[in-house]
Length: 318
Image 1 (cartoon, rainbow, N blue to C red):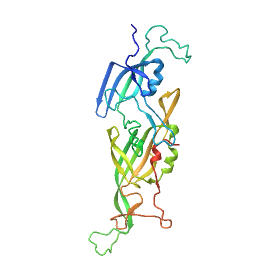
Image 2 (cartoon, rainbow, N blue to C red):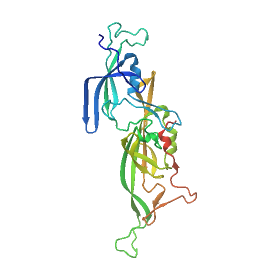
Image 3 (cartoon, rainbow, N blue to C red):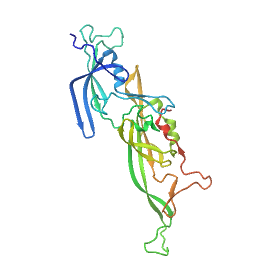
Image 4 (cartoon, helix red, strand yellow):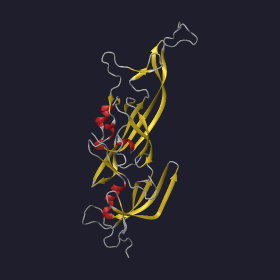
């Protein structure tokens, strides 16, 4: 009997490539901030390229689509939300010795013949929500709810109000006004939303440029917890409360793990930088400092900050 018979009950990748789990040397490692597991698999050597492309995941899309098309990595068969992040070729056995590990004359690619590819797969938890296309379709801005890391930094700050408004405590006649600007304490929150694995050719350059220095024209929901399926805990940011400041770091390209039909995919990670102000960006403290008033420019009646829809920064565009 051959050492590696045909796969009788194959598992299938998302793209339909058959493979089989091998449980020799299987391991699990549960730690406070993550989980890792190692497992061997085998697939036909001729299917190895398709197998790798499917199990490591990829992202594509079309301009004007509301979201990207994401092929999720292979999920661990027994641990929820644990995804394949590494595939190491361990051996290339054959079912017989005839022609095994010899130059492949038929393909003439510089590679060799074999029947099987044995891979060691590492599965890990990822730092963002790994969610299928169908489970974000109902969201107003789908890509905010997956493949994004949201970092927040709340802070207090002084907002200048009118000058000459400070007086010594106990001066009822306002005879000793202090001639310096006064301030009112206000709240702000810097928010960096980093989108991961964005196809380099669909980087939303124009949308980001259009949003620079502008505030959100519509209410935005940001996920703060994923409850499974298409259920999220969210936080609401009303219109005109988020200012698009730019990007937090340089945006550079990096190669995907494998190619599709021989074509290497290139991606970008995009760290979008916003500042949230609960009272809105077109409102300032009143002269008394007790309320917030919406101000406009004296001559044009234009607001301090123009508005823009932010959704275009989270979908395929150029």
